[in-house]
Image (cartoon, rainbow, N blue to C red; front, side, top):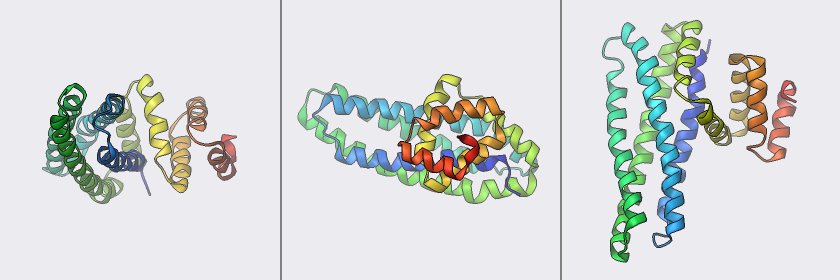
Length: 224
């Protein structure tokens, strides 16, 4: 039986999509347009914040449970997180350099480095997420009870403030395929109290085209 930690798959989908979308944006960036550079910097600040809170939640509330059962199990994932931190800092530095540089030749070099780092970020993030999806979550289903998984997930989500969730939930939802959008809503309906789930649906319904939401209503009449 799939436990509550399967909900992590949805944020993993969003992270993977954003990683590759960011790579595409870095490739196409007009390095001489301050507004475009500034917009990409703000986008990365949001993405970095999500990544750091997500990884922090895993290290604080999820990995220790695995470590109690399997010694050294979590170390490889924490190693990845530490490496990711270096990548985030490098990209942030490059974007800030592009924003403040007055030299066209310097901006050309910075933009080239940024694109290279965006490729590295997308590749390493996909590998790390694949390890968690294909190794960590199946172990949870085999060795951690549904009740404990639900407790772990609830604690992990508590790392995000309500204000942050207003931005993060639509970001996660819009990144999903149609089938995964349905799965996300069904799992959320099972996890959250009715009043909280209703509020979440009101938020999410405005984040996608009306025809996309109507398809969700057709599949899940309870959300109408």
